[in-house]
Length: 266
Image (cartoon, rainbow, N blue to C red; front, side):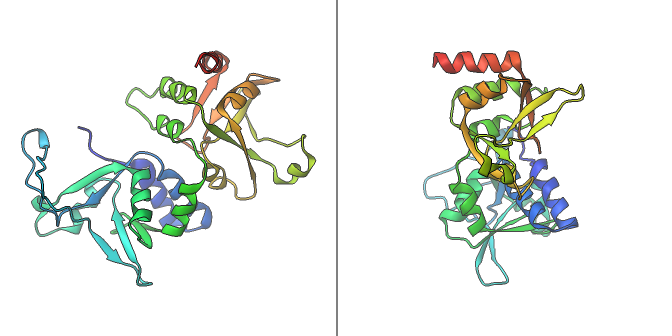
C-alpha cells in the first residue's frame, strides 16, 4: 500500500502561501483534481494497525473527521497532502494518529456534500483555505477526470499508455481560445505550443479550470476527444499536448492515430 504524498498539491499550496493571488488560488484548486488527500480521523473508534499496517474495520465503528471553525464562523474541513502534515496536529501522542486517504477530487465532493464552508489544506502551513462555493463551481463544470487521473506521474515516468486508454473512453476536452477572436468565428484562434524544433502542437485541457488557472483572459471551447484528435492530426500540427501547466503529456502522430483507430472501433 502506497502512502499518500500529494506533492503536486503541496507545491501549489507553497506557491500560493509565498505569493497569494487569484491565479495561485486557482492553481491549487486545479491541482486538487489530481492524486489523493488525507483526512485526520484520530478521534475515530479505529484500532491500531495490524500486520502490513492494515486496520480491521468492524460494524458500528465511528469515524470522526477533524474539522475546525473558520474566522467567518463557517465549518472548515481539514485535509492533508501527506502524513507528515498530520503528525504536528497531535504532538502529545503521535501513535494515536489515524488518517484516511481518498482521491483528492472525492475530498472536494465531500466538502460540498457535507455542507462545509471551507476546505483547509495542510492547516499548520504552508496552507490554504478553499471556499466551498468555488469548489462547487469547479465540480459542476464539465471535465475529463479519466484523462486527468491518467496524467498523474508514475514510477517509470511514462504516462502515455494510461492517457491513451483514458482518451479512448471518450468524453470532452477543452481548447484555450483567444477571447477577442471568438467574434470572428469560424476563425477562432485556438492556443498552440511551439516545440524546440520549431514545429507546432495543438493544446488541449481536461477542464475549463485548467485553462483559467493558466490565463483568466482566455475563453474556453469544448470539443469531443475524437474532434480534438482529428484536429491534432490535421494541418501542420505534429501532435497534441494535454494540460501544459502540468502534469502534462505530449502525444505524437502515431499515438494519436492509435487513439483515433480505437475510438472508431469502439
